[in-house]
Amino acid sequence: MATAALPPPSLQTKLTGVWGRNLVIAIPMVFLLVVFLLPFLVVFKISLSEMDTVFFKDVFSLRDDVVVMTLKFGNYFSLTQDSLYINAYLSSIKIAAVTTLVCLGIAYPFAYFMARSPADVRPALLMLVMLPFWTSFLLRVYAWKMLLADSGVFNNAAIALGLISEPIKMMNTPFSLVLGMVYTYVPFMILPLYANLVKMDLRLLEAALDLGATPWQAFWRITVPLSKSGIIAGSMLVFIPCVGEFVIPELLGGPETLMIGHVLWDEFFSNNDWPMAASVAVVMVALIIFPLAFFNKYQAESTGARA
Amino acid sequence: MTFNAGRRTSHVWMAAVFVFLYLPIVSLIVFSFNASPMVTNWGGFSLRWYSALMEDREIIDGFKLSLRIAFSTGCSSVILGTLAALTLHRFKRFPGRTLFAGMVNSPLVMPEVIIGLSLLLMLVSVQRLLGFPERGFSTIWLGHTLLGMAYATVVVLSRLQEMSPSLEEAAQDLGARPLQVFFLVTLPMISQAIASAWLLTFTLSLDDVVISAFLNGPGSTTMPITIFSRARLGLSPSVNTVATLTVAVVSIGILAASVFMSRAEKKRALEMAAAYRKTD
Image (cartoon, rainbow over all chains, first blue to last red; front, side, top):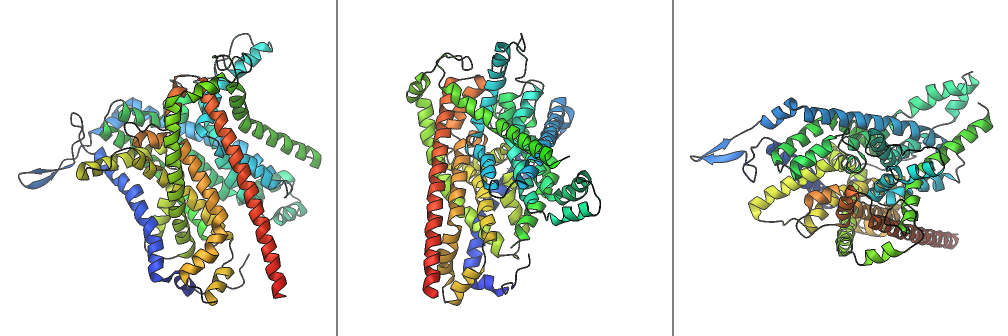
């Protein structure tokens, strides 16, 4: 929709004044630089430093009044040599990708049906999707442990009904892990898809049907391409955090599902090897940097376009 | 596919997803009233785990600390998030805008282990130089605020974008100064968004395990850290009771908030109607 009259560009400055404007920008900017960007640089620096007996050595040291920089690439070298790390990275990406696809498969039809349901029930449906967000994620993941355990609710019920005689092993398998991940992240897929699909111009579909397309063709050739940005946003919102997920694999995963978040945690808390943990983190950031850039571009477009 | 069959599919699909979303929550609640110490074997109705919870110092102390952190996080996130949303909404061109937008949005998806580790390593480096801060309340608060700010920005920004700029312009034309425009016009209009952003960041903070685990110090164990370590060991009746109480508090909170908001909405509609009558 085109707005009738755009405010003159000077209005923004007039509304706040130059000093006010600078202050409004500076406060969050400085906070983010110090709390978000600076820590990454510190991590990068520490990933190149050596571990002393109890503490990591500083990269820069003073020797005969000269500042000496000692870089140690050994951590990165062991990352490429030790199959533990490579396997953990690969399985994290695999599990995150499977989770994303399953979420998309569940959420797309759901968001589509939600967007096409009567306008007066949509807010209630949206509320029902959002509500689990407000209850503890940790406790909801724990609940699956209760449902899926060998003597858990599902197995007990199935045995009581005579469907099975032996409990089926579901906990601590790739199945329970992906289930827990999908469960946690599916609302993050539903919301952007719904926001996209509900805005769609239905006249385009009518036109396609009038021109002889079957509903199925119209769906694949009109609806799906038009919802591309929603699909991308939802997929990034699921995929990126899943790669580094820690709590869910810890509670629902098993020995076959070693993920990189766990490796980082162990290097830090069990081995106390901070430079190694930092290297694991740097490589993890490198893995997600492209999806992250994609996500930021989408966010910038969706927040910049409508103003 | 006929129309009716399509509608039936859609109803079945949606119902199935809702069952998937709510089944774990319902079962947590049901089994919190289980008399048996075997969490998933029903042994009759009982409140014994609730009375055990009242004695559980670890959970109670953790809860008090978590509540304080969550309250502070809600406030700081909302202030920073509102400023960031105003920046993104109003100022389309300033040096570093892309970087700014990237830094605001990235914590939404950034794995928490990375946020936690990097913040901790920075804080430790600062501590070696300056001797502070000690790890504990303030460092956890800082980490949660980074995450909360990102969510608060999204919520407030979407409200700002729905808002028509004409009211702010009118106030300005009538001679209001920039700060007056903000406090008398903009702020009341985005107050609902600010309230929901506060609630959202409050719950996020109350729930966080990973960032807190990296940034906590001796004697600052939050409730989620305690729950996580118990859940890791196996099923524990105390976790179920905590879950049920959380669900109860959240439901009451949301109910109260929506009643309050619909009342405020009605009041505003009445005032608007009265104002229009006067001008006629």
